[in-house]
Length: 98
Image 1 (cartoon, rainbow, N blue to C red):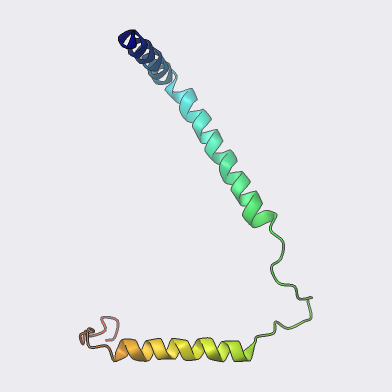
Image 2: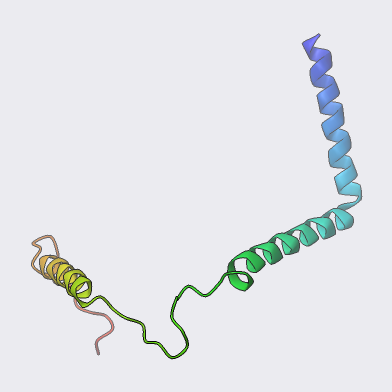
């Protein structure tokens, strides 16, 4: 029973593969068209249709929360200082300095 079932599946898959091989150009062309359609849809969704992310008018300035900026900047300086003082870091010369 199961042997006959697997033989039928094998025959169906073999027929499908042979059909694709015989019509390889058409199959490749259809896949290329599908890829271009998907790329167009992604471009449309994320580049063309996306509204402006800033809620400012043309003449308005973009406001920066200075307290939050200072907090983030101090955290960055702390991490940079800890990185430079780390005993695990070896003194490796900078290859970009001449």
